[in-house]
Each structure stands twice: as C-alpha cells, then as structure tokens.
Amino acid sequence: MARDFQDVLASLLVPGLLSAAQPMVKPEVPKPVSVQPLLSAAQPMVKPEVPAEPSRAVEYNNPGNVERNQDWAGMLDDTGYGTDNRFAIFDSPQMGLRALMRDVKTKIKDSDGNLREMINKYAPRSENPTEEYYKYVRAKVGSDRVKLSDLPDIVKGIIEFENKPGSALTRKYLNPRIFNEALSLSQINLPKGTSLADSRDRLMKMEEQ
Image (cartoon, rainbow, N blue to C red; front, side, top):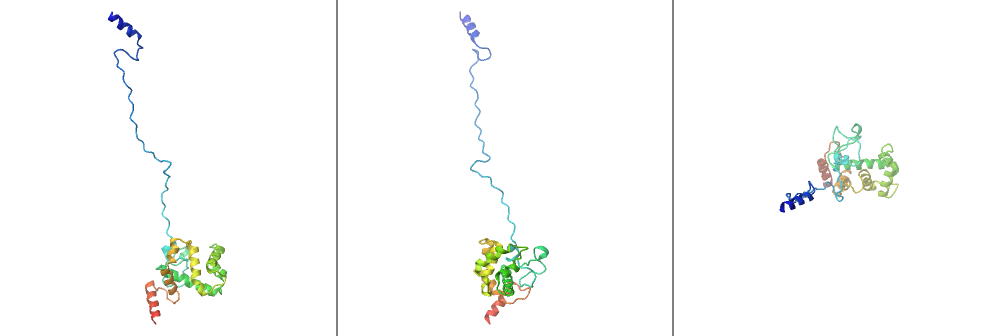
C-alpha cells in the first residue's frame, strides 16, 4: 500500500522542477556593491589653473612703458623689451616711476599744459585707445589745462590706465612709500647708470645742504 502511494505521488510531480528527493534551495542574492560617483551634481567641474603671464610692469619695473630714447638713471644698459628692445628696464620700481615722472614733466612743458596734446604724444592713436586714455587722465586731474603741480595726479592716472585701477600692480606703484620716493628723486638730475642706492645718497646729501 505504501509503495502504491509513492508511485502516485511521483506521477504528480512536474519533471525537472521539484522531486520528492530534492530539497528547496533558496536563490543566492548578490551582495550590493558600493560604487563611488564619478561626479555629482553638487561637484562642479574645476578647470585646471593656468598660471598668468608675468606683467611687463612687474618684470621690467616700468609701469608706464617708458622708452629707451633717453639716458635714464636706473636703466639697465644694452637691454630692453618690446620690438627692437624699445622699452626700458629699470633696476627698481622707484627708478622706473622716476623716469615716467620725468617724461611726463617734459611733455607738460612741450604741450604748454594742453592735456589732450600731451596724451596724444604719450599714447599715440596708432598704439593706444588715445581718447579713452585722455578722458581717464582728465578725470583724475579735473581740467584740460595742466601744470607741473598736477604731475602726481597725471602719473597716477597713467599708472591706473596702463595697469587697471585697483590691481595689485597699481597698488604697488601707488604705495605712498614707493611713489613719494620716486617723486622726490624726479626733482633732481641724475646721470645714466645711477642706481637706486646711489640716487638715495645723492638726494640725502642735497637735502642736508
């Protein structure tokens, strides 16, 4: 009787799915794999930093791009920058500023105080946005007619226009210590080849007299 029951049970089983002798096996569930996101919405792509090119005014101590057409004190011999080494390289910021101030002094006298004419000579249209240059410097001075007493404001306007207002470079050259020393040195005649240290000695001796 038991044998007959087993035969009947076997005939009811679906072949290949489950037999009386086959225990039920739970399917294996794969373990979750932690994947780090390559880039999330909260992580913007950062461009690699490209080093800025050195500014000419920093590299050459020439905030106004003064030319090598005169024997400037503090100017390095037999070297310059720009096409055909047109512009001077100075041994210090003070001596570069001094040259700029001396150059502007000459142009004030040559233009008889006409600011527009002076800027046209200093920044010709072939190389500069002369009208914008003139308007910027005029706003600093407050007049179309200038005198030697306007020299500091004119030079400050030139430095800001050439090197951008508020830039680190402009703040460096308009630092009162550097600017005022250059202004004092611009009042005395100095021969070519005179260094900043020698210029200071000459100025001190003159002030002691």
